[in-house]
Image (cartoon, rainbow, N blue to C red; front, side):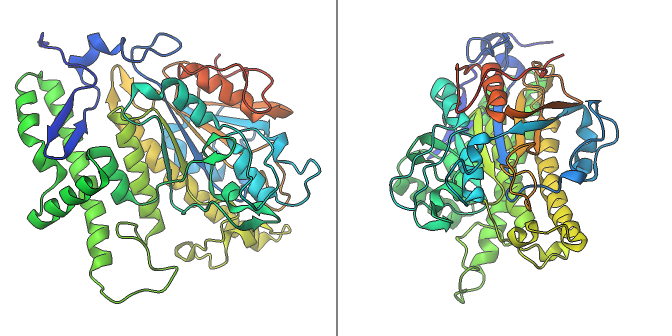
Length: 455
C-alpha cells in the first residue's frame, strides 16, 4: 500500500558538514513533474554525458556491417552487447571546423577543442585562446539552475591552460573539452576523493578540509553524519522506497571505501616518488580503477539529481599513455600513426576495446538503477566518441560516435544510422539539447537538428 506522505525531489539528508541528495523515490512521483519536465513532457529529468577518447579509433572494428537494427556488434563494441538495444551507432558525422582550414598542422588540438563546440580554434599558444561555447555549457546555462551543480567536468588526465602542445596550438585546446565561453575552458577534476567531497559536503574549503580531517580521526564515513536523518525519513517511506534508499546508501558507502583505500595505499609509503608517479592522494595508480571510480561518481551525481550535465575525458588528446597491462608498452599516440602496420593496428584495437570496456561499466551502472517505470539509463543520453576518425589519417569526417540511452523515450535505439559524409556532428547536439529541455537554434557549424534519432 502506498503512503500518502510526499517529499520534495530536493529533500536532502543532512548532518555536520554533510548534505546527501536522494535518488528518485516513489514518494516524490507526484511532485517531480514540477521540477524538470523534459521537452516531451516526461516526469523524470533527462541527463546528458559526453565521454571522450583521444587519437581516433580503428574504424574497421568499430563500424557495424550494415545499417538498420543492430545485429552482431563489431569487435570493439562487443563489451556493450548486453545493452545492444540501448545503442545508437551513428556514422558519417563530421567536424569540418577541426580541419586545418588554412591553419596547417595541429589536428589533435583541434579535434578536442572542436569536439563539443563545433568551432574553429584560434591557432595560438599564448593567452589569446578562442574557440566557442561547448554543448554541455549551453545545457548548463539553460537547465543548470535546477540542480546543485550546473555541470560536472571530469577526467583522468590533468588539464593545462598554457604552453605549446600541438604545432602552435595552446595546451588548453588539447586538454579541455568543456568551454564556458569562447576564451574560458573549464578544468577537469581528476581526483575521485575531491569529487566525492564536492558531492557530499558543504561549506568553505577550510570547513570541508576540517570535516574531512575530523572524519579521518574518528574513522567516520560521511554516512555516519546523516544516519539519524535517514532513519527519520525511513519511518515515513513505503517498503519499496526504504529498500531503494538502503541500496543507495550502501553504494555510497562502498564507493567511499574504495576511494579511502586508494588514499590509504598511497599514504602507506612515506618515500617521495618522482614524477609521473607522484599522484595526489586519492588518484589510483590502476588506470581502469581510476576510470571506474570517476564513472561511479558520475552515475551517483545523475542518480541523486545533483547535475544533469557532465563531461568525462578518459585521456587528453594526443595522449601518449602506454597500456602495459594489455601488453601494449608503446604510447597510444605513437601507435595511432600505424601506417597500416598490422601489429600496431592490433595494439590500437586492444586500447580501443579497453576504453569501451570501461564505458560498458558505466552503462551497466546506469542500467542497474531503477527510476520510475524504467532505469537511469532510459532517462539518459551518453555520447561516446573521438574528434578524430582514424588516428593515422587524422581525418575529422566519419567520426566514431556512439549514443547510449533512450533520452527519456525520445531516442529510438538498437540501430546503426548512416548519414551523408559531412553531416555536422553539431546537428546531433542540437537534437540532444532539445530532448534535455535546453533547446537552442544553433551551435558551432550546425545546420539543423539531426534526423532519424526517433523512428
